[in-house]
Amino acid sequence: MIRTPLCDLLGIEFPIFQGGMAWVSEARLAAAVSAAGGLGVISAMNAGADYVLEQVRLARTLTAKPFGVNIMLMSPSAAEVAQCVAEEKVAVVTTGAGNPAKYMKEWLAAGVKVIPLVASVAMARGMIRAGAAAVVAEGCESGGHIGELTTMALTPQVCDEARATNTPVLAAGGIGDGRGVAAAFMLGAQGVQLGTRFLVARECAVHQNYKNMVLKANDIATITTGKRLGHTVRSLKNAFSRKYFAAETSAAAISDEELENLAVGALRRAAVEGDEKNGCFLAGQIAGLVQKEQTAAEIIREIFAEAEELLNGAGRWVR
Image (cartoon, rainbow, N blue to C red):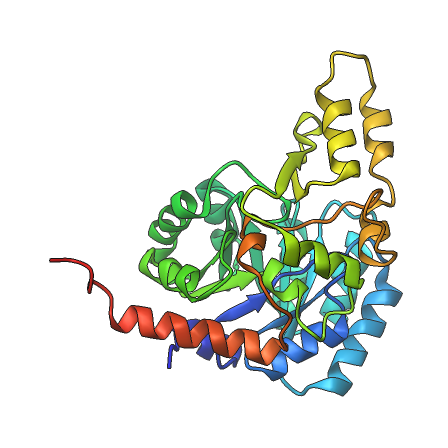
């Protein structure tokens, strides 16, 4: 069985996180992943502290295992949510879309382990100095907000940076099966974070149309938009994403404000309403590997059984 120091650090059985996906990663999915031995993560998205408190307390009724909360730092409610998770002493906080340094002192004082998503070595260095328990090196193959570097390029460089302080690194982006997990460990990671694969977990409450779009996806099913605004996002190709891309790249004049307004409510329309034309269906490039709905426990067991077999037989193709 694959076990790394990350497991001992967090009290989990498998070194796997479920990504914090807005309108997707709620208490029931997070609790199912944690109960299965990974680290489930509740997404705070743009919601306020009341919603997060409700979700944290619900998750605690569903599992006694540790779980985390993901805070999108661009959210207007980030400060109140940051205080909420400190007061609730949530086991882990993961962060994305910004720098969490100004909240870290409060979290660390509350005994919360802080594990930021990083898209560069420089950001990883800063987070480690600020007291991060681990970092997630997220490549641009991921769904949602992404950086420029691929997982293959970013992960080993972040691992080299983290080695001096023995800070665990998780790899994220483009990982959807045991092969990806095995590759991440070979690059130096001690764990992985998966988002798109958990979209089709049976415990995931996202609209069935969203799951069906992931299940029908192939290797070229995603598109990136938002680069002009400095917030690149990866999603599945559909009428909405193509319209947004055209508006962003067209020679016809459209203001940044108009461009931003095009996306208002689009993720909710996808995840909650299942609007296949007007919704924004965030998903990573591994969507083409996802072929069936399974329970969170089945996903985790299958992935790690495959990864262990591959790692035990590493080099078998070399003559």
